Image (cartoon, rainbow, N blue to C red; front, side, top):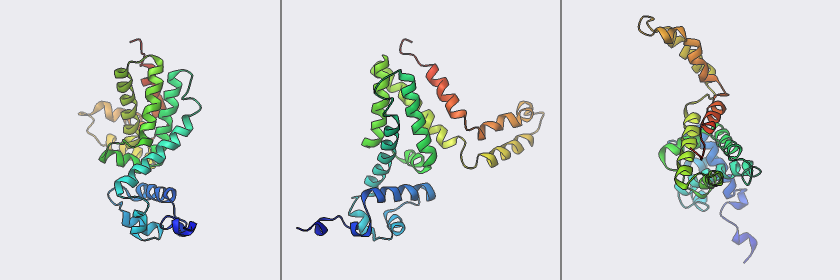
Length: 220
């Protein structure tokens, strides 16, 4: 059988599993999960819907591949520090990688709202984190709890922390706080600027992460 006849559907159009996954991530980031469909993705890629199904049997399989792509990127980033050294720098670099990737790709944050991230690529990050914690002396139960704390903090921060609209959100918050009745909300009115500054503070994630890591110790 010739090489051409063995090629995957669409390969002669420059299509590949990797290109489909990248296109899916771009569509998720731009339009959100509710607007995502195999048909819309096919239109974006200028191919037929069945061509996409030739690479991925279902939308769920494709979405798992999107999550895997992020996991692989983060795993590559932390590969130099995950195999040795102190556990706190290892965990810090891992969670910073997760934060940076989720900030760049909000579609994955939205995806996590709808379904657990249990694909091999996502679980690779869990493996790296759990290994670092077990190496540090945490029990299996403690390691699971500590990683969950870091995971939820990071996802929550990416969902509600500073983003592209940070400056307008800050300004709106200041205006809303200053408009409150001062006799009922004296503290908020007085600290309107300070309370709103965190909405645009790009250093806040690392400060919170360091505080969490500093408060964790396998001996306690």
